[in-house]
Length: 536
Image (cartoon, rainbow, N blue to C red):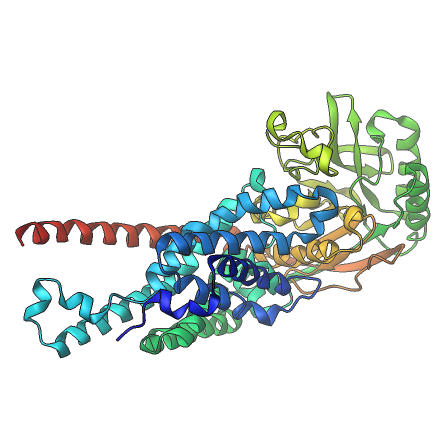
């Protein structure tokens, strides 16, 4: 006989103790991301949370366990925001954590204990069945439910990741799949279905392990699920298409590692840039907010930068966090500088950091500026993505992104589809210099490079700066947060289009379809039982 879920969970004690356990279980996956970067833990990190939620005595309690676990996850993954947002980070975590409440219900329905045999025997039709037939029927139903869980639990998790990836809810920071940025087979999977496919695989493995631990009856579907996941990784590694290398381009990043006056930062950036003369560099990338004056509106500054371009033989991609003549307000713009000054190619950041660069619903949430370092005024948004030709590199087309935008898979994918052969990110995480944020941010470039078969450069003001090849492999050295230096990278250029670039977020649509089909099937079964119950 099955043990009721509530009896299994008595060791948790009071509902308060259970709530603390849920929050702690939800926080465990934070260890899979940099700086710890325990990528191997990802495949069991959700198991404590899954086991806790499946043991919930009611669906309402399962929803609460999902909510509290989601709150713990958001707090742990974004703990580096605490110095900036203070108590407001708890408010945000509670709001975003609520997205996991429906997932908690889904986990309990699919992984929780089935109705007991004695309870089923009390229903009318079951009275006439032999005990053995009833038990066999229940085993089959339970096996089917656990097999469905291997698809639906990961699909439900992916829906949570998708919804919270909306830029106004904070964006896709801390997607489970992003934790595998150092693992070549996972990067190969990302080139097929994006980071979403990697997340699905991770949650499927966790679900299988949870089934093996909690339900001996689920051994067959659980083992089958693990084998399918292993087979998917093996097939991707040995048979998935790979980019074809067609040459290289020499690109440099300048990391001044100064957060003092703008003039001191500019002077250090100029000195580092001059050191690159004669090294065959074709593009030099400065970090986000490298200038607080737009060179397009200041001829003297434009002349200084043009002189650097002539001296190095490279074009400069700088970033101006400033007002400009086109419209009132401040925006963050990537501006390309050639030997004659600004080329006219520029890109203004489109997706802004909530509370860092603007406050959503400022009339309601503006009080956040009084309890932390939230944005005192809202930055302007760019209106569209831009692909820039670099004349010094024979017209090589680059796709710029600014800071937070590297977390969004769709932005990099659109740049690749529009013809960008190199992705370039300009970032500044100086506010979070001694936290996990710089390492987390730099790791995202590996995913974006692998997804689209396009090398990517991640240039920052204060570290970590890095470069990755078209398979997501690291190129050259990383400039840590303790370095003030320029680094040169020979980036491999790839031909062809990755499956993810071509077909997009098919893994997301597949997860949606699975949930819709399961919901329709459940609804039809419920409707078909109503007439039978009415006849009793």
